[in-house]
Amino acid sequence: MNIMKNLFTLLTLLLLTLVACSNDSAVDEKPDNGGMYVPGNLPVQNVARAIELIDNAVECYFTGTGMAMSRYYNPYTGNRSSELGSVWMYTSSIEAVNAAMKAMKTGKTKGETALYDSHFNRYKELLAQLYDNLEFYAGTFTLTSYTQTKQWTVYGVNRGNGKGAAQVEGTLNVYDDQMWLVRELLESYHITGEQRYLEKAEYLTEYVLDGWDCTLDEQGSPLGGITWGPGYITKHSCSNGPIVSPLVWLHEIYKGKPDEVTYGYVAADNSRKLRTEKKSDYYLNFAKAVYDWQKEHLLRPDGVYDDMMGGYDSPDIKYVTIDGERYRTGSKLRDRVGPAITYNSGTMLSGAADLFRVTSDATYQTDLAELTDNSFAYFAKPEAAKPGCYTFDVSGFCNWFNGVLMRGYVDAYSTYTAAASCIEAFQNNLDYAYENYQYKHMLPTNLLVGWYKAEKNKNNVEGMFTFAFAAEYAVLANYEWSKK
Image 1 (cartoon, rainbow, N blue to C red):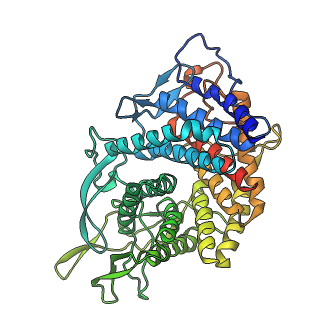
Image 2: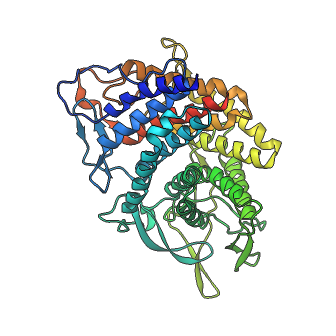
Image 3: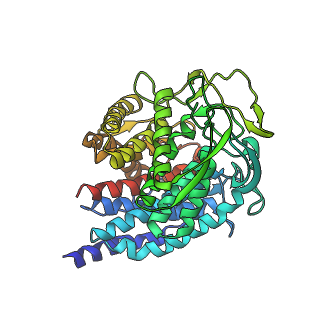
């Protein structure tokens, strides 16, 4: 029976070999509904569609051996933008490939080997190429932080002219970009077992946590919070929440091991000291601290998370000299600033789920249940004309943000099964778009509205949205298998 099932699946997946970014003008200028359908096997169909979208996106958005990523591509005109994607946008491709590989591995454990056998190794090679060309965003600079002055090699917002040549000083690198990379590097480590991914993840984690405001308030407690970047004063949801889950994963990697870490902190007399502790404890304690800071400062009365803390008394970063050494001073911020954005609640959902898994602290269980209900009520509106579908904000970068929220619901599900209805909304939205609007292996920016019919030059799609849709399909496959 399994042999016949895999044979059927393999035959349906042979269509994937036809996926390409075609400029053939003979292709009908209408939605192409001849895509991936695997009747009766939703998780396999989800992975197949993820692979279809990824393979086509790689052809459409990337140029040359250096894999320069265009920000936009229009499937109706065949034009890609000269504007290149930021490192955040580029990372979305790594996210999608990771998600697809993870789903392939899960499928293999469930007896669905066709996808794994056909695609896993080439995706492993694609992943390595993506990381290799990520180095076009890398650059080196010297940073004076709250506890030290140190040279770092990190990833800048914009792509440089060569590997390691990107501009990263000041506001040209931000902590959240590094956090998303840490998350994907750890996913890659778990998927492939390659140590280099873990090593890079820990290095970037060290850099991010160097941005934690460990200066003291009047009561002698750390101010806490991580600014948007080393060149910023404001502390954002997006520069705190995304690191919580990766810190928990690092705790799990080192649990029961003797590995230690030494880090700086501010003592009661304002001097800078060093402390050494086991990595497993260090990472878990920081995960709790970041989570608690964001919950205390950015959770709104309506139960979702605001965007940032602002209201500093000066527009400039200030420094102090202590014992002949220069250090950054802390930022006492007064104002919680909106708007609420889906991913800022999504990262905290995932963080609460991971923290509950490793601590069994019922506080996190309560938090994720309340945040699941409150966020869906706030962000999702039922689409009366399309039963089972829900409207989410798709302006700006919200398509990618919404995928982070969906992942939060998936992470919450094992603890709070009521999240299933939230997850189903994303599955229905994707399937509605795929079955009604899929065109040349792409989905439109607005999944429930579709393409511009009369003005085809308006059908530019952000590369990160295409990769986000693919990642969502892959995450949904894992979710479906987890229920079986």
